[in-house]
Image 1 (cartoon, one colour):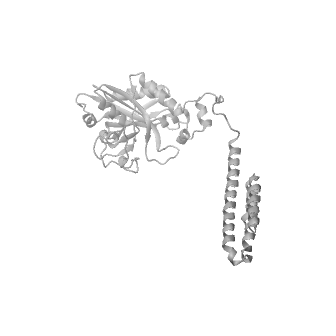
Image 2: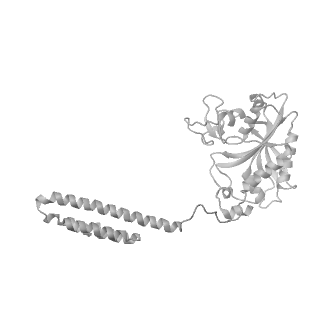
Image 3: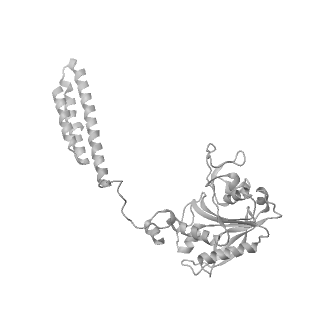
Length: 347
């Protein structure tokens, strides 16, 4: 029987090396170790072996079984590798230059962001940036948002574990938590803490909130906020700037209006609506586009500005909402799907 087992292994090694497909492999496996396979038939002959020889024969059968399993695993691995190679296609030389697939295009959100920054630069604003990972002080406390405000709940804001550490973002007060910023207003606080007025900045960037994604909402979106601090700044200045921005971006027929609202950061505060029925897919007379107001004196006092001397306004809006208006897009999810059929339209 020892010679028979040795011959079985040699035959299996030759046959398995020649297999090319999974059906061939399964058939060969059944022939070797299946219920009616050759090894199974030899194992059934153990009853005819003399009692004193059974331990040695059992050892040989187990060794043969192990060796056959190794050969089967190797054969299946070779078939899987061949299948993957066939899917990947012919090998390439990574040192060769890539084929010319044509020029790239800007993302529509990038186009709107850059156009908004260009419009605001013309009236003296500079672009300011800040970290996307923030602390509660910059995102909430300094913006006059109380600890019990709903926006600070874990249902609305992405918080990091208490053990998280970020070397480039230092905590302002003991015990505060790290979070993904819910707005770019934190950039305004960081800018005011760097030096005295006058200040005129625009802060575009990515923000995060616990929203359920649908056609008009996303947990990851982009905002653009502005801050102007100087002497004798009024609501009239704020309204004039917004009229200028939307007329420049959406056309001279665009109109804006204010509705009283509440924001902890500003007082008085307003919701901004715009009328742009000359744009495609705009069916409503007025569309809510953002929030604004005069910076609350409490916020000025927190950054060391004298509210009796300085005044200012702030406003913010979503870049996705602007892009949807400008380009007639009806689903915010298109911006994040990386579909070239969509993106190539903005070449």
